Image (cartoon, rainbow, N blue to C red; front, side, top):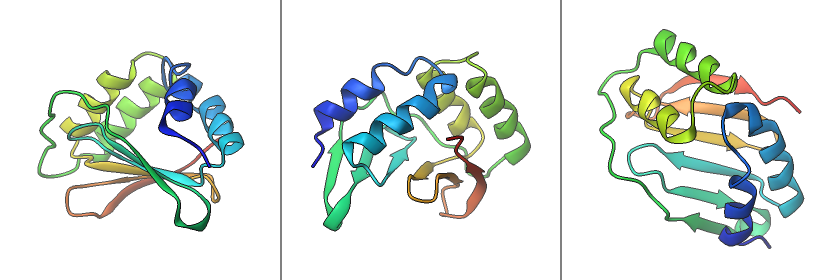
Length: 129
């Protein structure tokens, strides 16, 4: 199974959202099936085969997530990030401003779903292969 050190190494290559597809390929090679990222503190929970789980607790200073989601503005920030215009922490701050509390990557389905504080799906996006 994978370790958080291996995941951290793969993530160290990510400079912007433009690097995300290559990061997903690295995770596939490690055996990661999906993960949840929590915007308020940055911790990530990874999961693999047979209910294997690993948590990355390298966090940043707490970010307040807006009470309600602004899907349209979030999409604007997401496009900027995917175009390489923002770094990861900036994207996390933008997500929080738009009421995104968590995102969940499903590597099997190749989707990334963004959720608000109540757990409602705000946006489901297909991950480019």
